[in-house]
Amino acid sequence: MSKRLCHITPQGYKNFLRDHLWLMNKFQGNSATKYGLTKEKVARESYELKKKETDSSVAVKTSGLWRNPKYMELGCSPDGLVTSQIAPKRLLEIKCPEMLKHGDPQDFEKYLSKSQQDRFCLHRSKNGDVELKRDHAYMYQVQMSMGLLELKECDFVVWSPKNMFLQTIKFDRKMWEKMCAIFIPLHNRLLIPEYFLMRTPRKLEPCLLKYDV
Image (cartoon, rainbow, N blue to C red; front, side, top):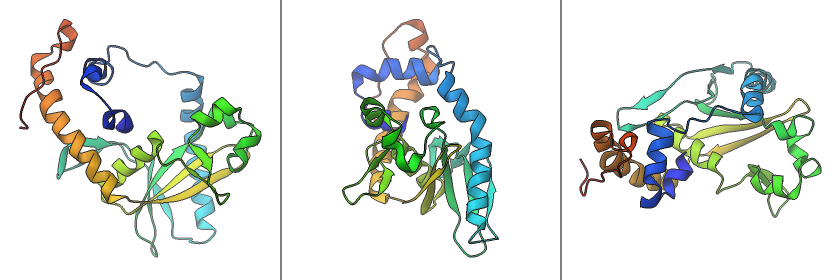
């Protein structure tokens, strides 16, 4: 959703409110989301075991919704928080793509079609390294979560039964500040009036305040 909000236009406000505030077009899930949810715990345990190979003090904790008093308009639900006696706390984000349930994320080109690769979150850089695409929605997601939790690093995991891809992503303050400059005014100008006026469920156009509150 973070990437969608960064590129939303006034023409998309009504559909955004329908989808994400009033849940009028609520996504019921599909085989891919079901697979990802059922495998997340296994992936988290696999990640923790791998990290313990080099740091026995590593612990992964799950959590629910996080809010930051500095950014009360925003929230995030991380897949895990990683603590260690020898390293700073970091974010954990896990993806378990159904399209790779029989493949290796490190060698995704062998298992995915060209159209699947275009949609996939990873790509191979010019120097041959597999990495998260800079413009992918997951990059926006982890940067927003790091910003809200005030963390400097995120371990981004793509898991399959065959192997696990792990990339440590650094917090990008400029990217976070750009997102805040969009998200917070949009919340105050678009969502706050909608909370009270409920125009979208009444099939009316959203009300957009001309000033920030």
